[in-house]
Amino acid sequence: MPFVSILVLALMIGALIDVITRDQSQVKHLPKMMWVILVVLIPLIGSILWFALGREYGEGGVSLPRMPRREARASAPRPAAAHWAPPVDARTTEQQIADLDREIEEWRLREEIAKRKREDETS
Image 1 (tube, rainbow, N blue to C red):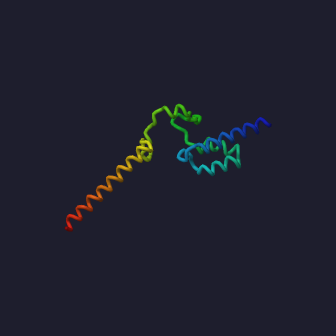
Image 2 (cartoon, one colour):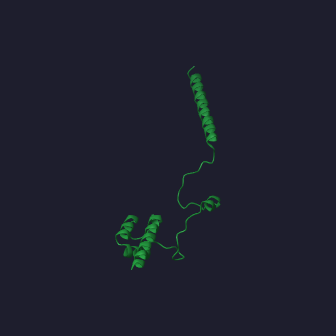
Image 3 (cartoon, rainbow, N blue to C red):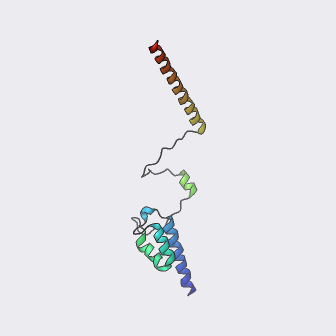
């Protein structure tokens, strides 16, 4: 009997980890928090329901979630983003500050030119 309890506990822990780490778009029928509560309150039935109904499986069927490896993730080229992402500025901080200084100087010169034009028009 303790063996069955250990199996139910392992199934519950696996289901909880899967619910928590899964993206909301891959969760079906209930919000993630409801699945967590269901798995915790009714471990055996909740876990079975999660794996049978609650999660979305890929085209290949059942697959174990893969944990990304840092070294592979850092060196591998990034796939094109499916959603909008803000642009990434590759300049260093010093380069950004220098660009801002040039822009400020340009605007100062433009204001000075406009001021001189106004003075010439009034005289």
